[in-house]
Structures are given as C-alpha cells and as structure tokens.
Image (cartoon, rainbow, N blue to C red):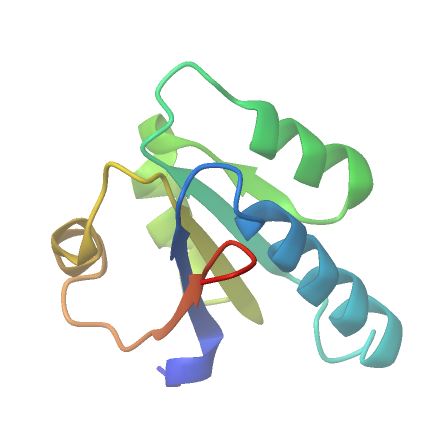
Length: 116
C-alpha cells in the first residue's frame, strides 16, 4: 500500500485539523475527480463527540465517515479506498496509529496553531 494513501493528521484542539482535511478533500474532488472517488475519514479518540464527523459528512456527501467504534469497518474499506484521512484527537499518540494500522505505511501531518 502506498504511503500517500493514508494521511494521519494530528494537532491541538481547535488548531485547524478538520479545516485542513476539508481543504484537501475539496482540492482532490475538484482537481482530480476521477482519481479520488472513494475517500475515507476516521476521527479517532472522540467517543461521543462527533462534530468533525458531521462537518465532513455534510460538506462532502461522498466521503465515507467513520468514528472510533467503526475501526474494523474503516480497515475493511481501506484497501479499496483512493485516499484515507485519519484525524487524531489530541489525547492520542502515534502508538494508537501503530496499533490500528499494524505496520501499514502512512503520511503524517502535524497542524500547528498560528504563531508556533
């Protein structure tokens, strides 16, 4: 599996992780619509708070959105996806990703607040 297929995004609460992911999805859907037909999004570490999942599903109806309790379904869909975004809640580290992806390659992105 290609490293660029799975993008793991981390950062502080409110620093713009979801906004960055939305920008990336919009760019890919606009510039390369035939190359990115199956896009996945997993918000990890949220438990019951699903604001970011709602935003992605409302703004991008074709994106398959998953939450913590759907990790198995996410992994089952991963092989046939064109790209997948995993947004880490601030309480999760890369240990979570290593456990979830089980040595699958991924591209890490850190979003920092302005002024850092």
